[in-house]
Amino acid sequence: MASELWRMDAVDQARLIRTGRASAREAVASSLARLEAVNPQINAVVQFMAEEALAAADAADAKQARGEALPPLHGVPVTIKVNVDQVGYATTNGVVAFKDAVAKEDAPVVANLRAAGGIIIGRTNLPAFSMRVFSDNALHGRTLNPLDPTVSAGGSSGGAGAATATGIGAIAHGNDIGGSVRIPAMYNGVVGLRPSLGRVAAFNPSQQVARPFGSQMMAVQGPHTRTVRDCRVALAAMAKGDPRDTRWVDAPLEGPALPKRVALVVENPGGTLHPAQAEAVRTAGRHLAAAGYEVEEVSPPNLNDIVECWMAIGANELFPALLPRMRQLGDPDGIASMETWNQLVPPSGMARFLQAIAERDLFIWRWLEFMQTRQLVVLPTMGSLAPVHGLDTTLEGQRQVLDQIRVSLIAPVLGLPSLAVPVGRAGRLRPGVQIMAPRFREDLCLEAGEVIEAAEGVVVPVEPFRG
Image (cartoon, rainbow, N blue to C red; front, side, top):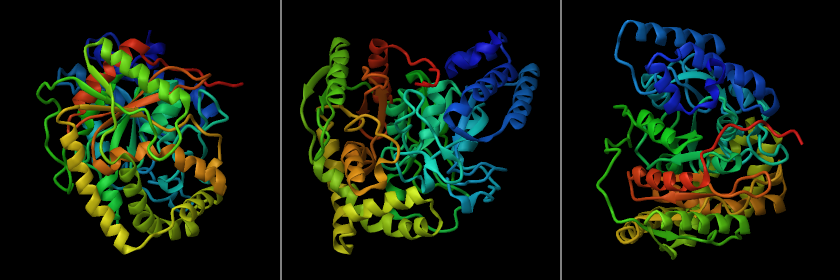
């Protein structure tokens, strides 16, 4: 059984370790063996921690032998994305110039996962500067989708999604400013949670310059898992506070019971919607209706306006701050992607930027008002299925990518939680939906996600597809 521990989710691994039926070292060794077996085929993990992970596992087993209190993820193997600080490892962000930028302190999300008992076995890939839906860069190379290596594994947390799908760790850390947890979750056929803004403390201690407003107000940290119950325990671990964080809120993880009313959104606002994605939304609605939810196809307020709000903030602040750095330090594909994005959504000026900031507040309260009568909103995770590698490096290809991501931009603008779960199949790929709830009500997302998971089946590790 020890050699097969990597197949289990975090909840089962922690239970076996806690009850003495397995050791932390066995769990970590099993995941490291799985990493060694499949990572050469997909390149999901790009910084390796075998020696350190086994030493941490031995320390965890010694702690248990002494009869000390055990944290909830005691001995569970996890991975961390390479754009957050982890002491002793470079915060590369997929950029060659940062390959020696070794962190001296853990970011809060890393420290929280360690405190919860998670044992870090490796660090996962992303695009340069974390700004594409393709996890490919000149420093670490390309992550391949284990379901279909000809298409993207997602971005920016593509390594995390691919690692989770193949059984490299039960929980993978990711982050999300425009879909970077939810998109890889869908592309790799796993579960991904974008928490509410302020739920998880989120900053890098190594940071030397102020983050742009858009990053401050839309970027969050969240988990990839194969089961919804693992997403629940991963969120609880990640959500511990840090007194230095300027947005963290000490909000309860469980709220009062609310009516189970769901708005189904069968559209990609202002863009096209693949039939498999439309069917995924309606199938999810049927699963929820069968479990007693009241389900109705209806559009919440200002869907297209919210997408354009994200684009205005990005075009006028995020991209002008990042594009010069990308030109200076980025790789050719990353530069081409950002240049084509900039051509299609050019800066529109300070007046539009300030208007978008003001509109954001209006849209938030309109949605919170809407959610007084429909507590959950179920939308497609993306407008289409995973695209072929490098599609965003040409102007027409980038136009298609920007069309596909529109629906993923809604949750970041509103700061609301959104859970991505796979629904149905389209060839080798999994379509999927995202479930949105009011602020700090991730529990409602997870409860509905468990209903869908029960109907669709729990995700199990896959072998990388070789064609």
